[in-house]
Image 1 (cartoon, rainbow, N blue to C red):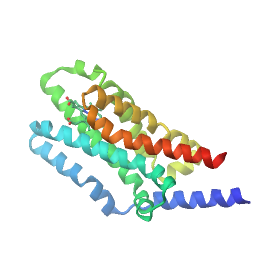
Image 2: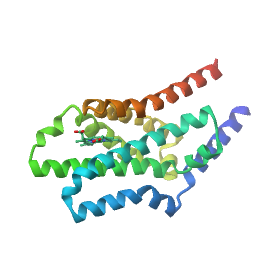
Image 3: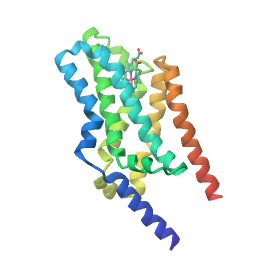
Image 4: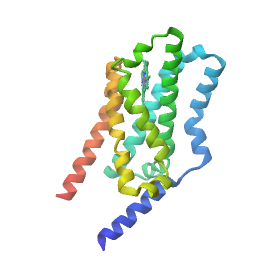
Length: 204
Ligand code: HEM
């Protein structure tokens, strides 16, 4: 009985968490993205400035999206629960900015023709892991996919995000952005471990 109530509560929480789909939240999360695309359409040589900023936005949205669940499990502040209703927008925004960021890299390579850099150890993990995973997560972050796959299977698919996390850490470290990697991923990994630790101590 208790288990049934827990499952019901969890699914209500899930539904509510994924439900907020207002146009305003999409526009807000993608506003800078639209400006960056317009800048590139106007002057493609602006890729030099857009590349790092799109990278920062992709990273910021990625960290916030991943931090929300563990933070709520550790301390369920109302603002976190409210923000969690926009998880889909935050996750999709991370993917959009990452595509734009990678797009700038492709503009750069089409200018200098140095395509061998696609195989660089800093690029390969994000190219073959992070971007495809972020794409799959972006297109399956909806109620239709949860129903289609069933929640346990959907959750399993979404666990792939941890591979994307590793790929992005490698990307930053190997591109020489060691401080940025530490400042962003150390807090995230700490709360992810803390949540796991709390889960295990509650179980035992
Ligand atoms: C195929 C995918 C990607 C490509 C081709 C790519 C390419 C690059 C390149 C060329 C740089 C500049 C490295 C340097 O300093 O010389 C860079 C930096 C960076 N990337 Fe990526 N990246 C990709 C995916 C991602 C993803 C998924 C994220 C985050 C979610 C990300 C976040 C960043 C950040 C924050 C920087 C540092 C920006 C700076 O200060 O220059 N990248 N990336």
